[in-house]
Image (tube, rainbow, N blue to C red; front, side, top):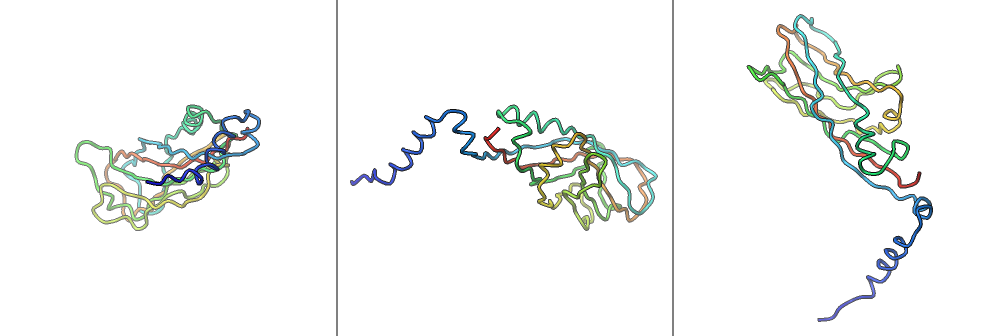
Length: 184
């Protein structure tokens, strides 16, 4: 059995050089790390009596969770280079007689910041008939700058094909990919 050590020498040299770097040297290298996170159980209600047509519902959303994930992994919001939503899922949260989404023709999740307009981050259009859960298509846009804003808001925008006859509660789960830089 023949062992090939030569191809491993450059890799070993890089590892030794990197571990011998000072913090300042590592910052100059400007390495990137990728993290995954989930905003789970973002609750919202759709009230009864909403007429057919477009409407929106504000979502209870805590953008500080992103700061917590970054801090837990040794990063700051200033090191956030990229943030993209990679998955979005809505489900009915009513334990008794969960409703279907037949009254909803289109559902979009939108993000707004500092009083500016909203950006669509995920949607389902058209909503499948008889669905009790919805998997949304994500837009793939980079939200890093938006998430650094002082005020970040999330809403569900719906187009209703018919009036809502009974109130219902829903849960939104968002998966995201973060890219951070090691430079400070």
